[in-house]
Every structure is written in structure tokens, then in C-alpha cells.
Image (tube, rainbow, N blue to C red; front, side):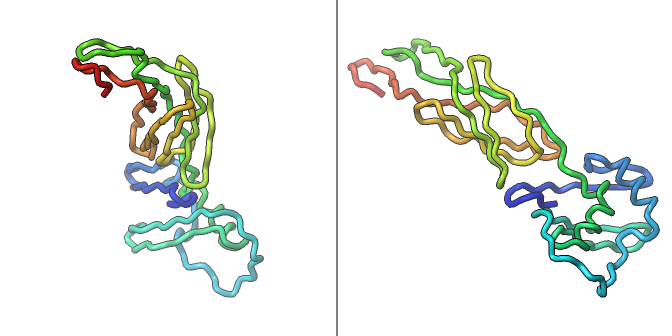
Length: 198
């Protein structure tokens, strides 16, 4: 399943008994059971308006009641969009997930000698999350931030007035995302025994 460039999901679905990693597997199996001929070939003589409804693409491969299935779905015109809606329980939107994190600044000591601790602190910053064509922005405070996003792979950047690396988080279905920790470099360096900064 491709929702947009760079935003994809791969799911498995088993019916009777219900199983797999599909986020709505019970509803998907029940919906397919209620269709007269799931995955049947579409008529080729239909009149379709050329109305593009979205970048979504999907491919379903496997078996249904002993028959092979290799079906493709998209939303490039009115007929394809109507077919997508017919299979809406199977081609479900990706679930949402709340990602939590913080922006750390360090080192923070004017002079840090070897063996001495120099605290890393949470800092205010503007955090931007990007996944394909999706962009979300949130303000991070001393307590960090939380952001509700579609499942997928997200790249986080922070604007804290200094160098902050990009952090990539895997929040796809079946993955438990780790907290987002963006460690920004203040430029303060430790002082060695001979006085040189490192």
C-alpha cells in the first residue's frame, strides 16, 4: 500500500480464522465475505470521468477461497475511485500514532573538563516531522513534545538555533516507535589537560 511518495505500508491478512497484521482485519474479513465476487475483473467498457482523487496505490496478492488473487487499486479516475471505495475496509487508511520526544541541548557548561559531568537540558525548539509529502510542525518545550501522525516512517528535524541532526522514526504498522530524541550541538567543547578544546 502506498499512500503517498515515501509513505507506504505492507500488511498481511488471513480470514477464517482471522489473523495477520492488517489494522482492521476483523472488519476487512467480514466485508470481503459480504461481497458477491471479491477481486473479480472489472468491466473494460465502463465510461469513467478523468477525475484524479489521490495518489494512493495498493496491490493485493494471495488467495481468496482457493483462487489466486493479484489485484491492483488506485484512484486515478472515477471508476478506480469507486472500486477503491468498494474495498474501503481492506484498503483502510493507515492508523494514527502519537509520537513523543524532546530536543536536548548539550554540552551546556562553559568549560567541561575530562571526567566532569555537563548536563544536557531539554530546550524550546520548533520540530518538523516529514513523511513523503506530509509535514507536521510542533513546538517542543522543556517537557518535550507530542505529535499525532499517520503511521509510516517520519524524519524529525529541530530548529533550535544550532546544529540538530535529523532523526528518523519507524512508526509503521507492527512497529512500536521509540521516543524521538533530537540531540543538538551547542558548540561548547570540553577542555583537555593541556587546555585545548575538544
